[in-house]
Image (cartoon, rainbow, N blue to C red; front, top):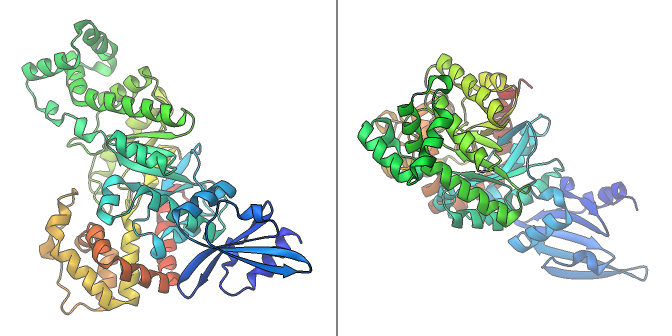
Length: 488
C-alpha cells in the first residue's frame, strides 16, 4: 500500500487523529485520542520499527503475516524516540530571517501549540514552539523536558512538517544551560541581568574608576579597551568607562556561557541570544557597540540581541511610550546590528505590542526575533470564561488574592484598585475586560504560576474539552500579531 492509501485506511479507525498519521520507514505512526487516554500508536509488519518505544504490544495474524501494534503513552522516553524516528517533531537550529516565539505556559491536555501552529502555518515566520524560562518553569512546576515534549506531541498531532525552534529563555546559570541542552533545546537566551551594574549610570568618577580598575587589574588591557571605543560617535573616555563598568560583568558571563555551550554541543549546533532588556535605563548606542564588539572579540556568534528599547514593555498590554522615540532608537540599534555582526534584534515581552509591530517589522526589514508567551495564557483564561464561568471566577479570585505576591516578579503598572471583584461579574463583562482592560489583563496574566499549581488540572481539562473554542481564540489573537509584524 502507498503512504496515502495507508493514511486513508487508518483515518477511519476510531480515535485516531487523521492529521497525525505518518508513514516513516517500515512503520505507521499516529495519535489516538479516546476516552481521555491519549496514546501514540505504532503499526508495522516489522518488530524493529517499534524498537525504542515503550508501551503495550499487540499482534494480529493477517494472511499468515504478523502485524505488530504498539500503544504507547505520551511520556518523555517515547517523545525522545519519536524525535529520532520523525525528525520534524524535534526543533532545529534557526537560520531564518524571521522567527516568532509563541511559548505555551500550560502544556499537556491544555496545550496552546496546536493553535499556534495553525496561526503561523501560512506565514513567513519560523515558530519557536518550545519556549520557556527557568522562572516560568519554576512557577508552573514544569521542566525543560516537559516543555519540549509537549511541543513534540503537538507538532505530531498537527502533522506539522516545517521547521520550528526551541528557546530556553532567560538562562542565568551553567546548570540551567545544561538542563536545557539535555532536554534538546536549540536556542539559548542568556540573561546576565544580575551581572549588570545599574549603579554605574549614577556613580561618581571616583567610584567608576575604582570599579573599572577591578575589572582590569592589568591597566594596559584597560587602556586598550578604552581606546577601542573612545571617540567613536563622540564617545568620551568617561562614557566608555561607565559602559564598561555597567556591562563587562555581563559580557564576560555571556562569553563563559557561549564557550560552555560550544564545548557541549558544537558551535554550529545552537542559536545564542543575549538579553539585556531587564535594565533600569534603555540600552545606549555605545552600550550596544561595546557589548556586540566585546562578544565578537571573544568569538561569540550572536543569533540575536535583546536591547532595552525606549519605552515600557509590560506584560499582556500594548507598548507604552513615545512611538517616535521607539522608532528612533530601534533604527540606531538596527544599523548597529548590521554593522557589528548581522544578528537579529530580539523583542522581549512582545505580547500584544500591536502599536509598534508594523514599525518593528519595517525598520528591521523583516530581520527579527519576537517573543510572546503570556498572551496565550490569557486566551486560555478567556476560553475558560466563555465555557466554564465557575472555574473562571475561581481563577480570577485567586489571581486577585495573590496579586501582590505575583507582581513582585514583574515590572507592571496594574492597579488592583481598578479591578472589579468577582461578585456580580457576568460572563460578557469578563470577556470584555479580558480583551481590552489593561489592569484586568495584567492581574490575570501574572498569576499563571499560582493558578496552574492550584487549578491546573481543571484548567487543562476545560481547555481540552473546549479545544475548538481555545484554538479559535488563539488563531485569531496570534494571527493579529503575525499580520501586524509581517503585513501578511
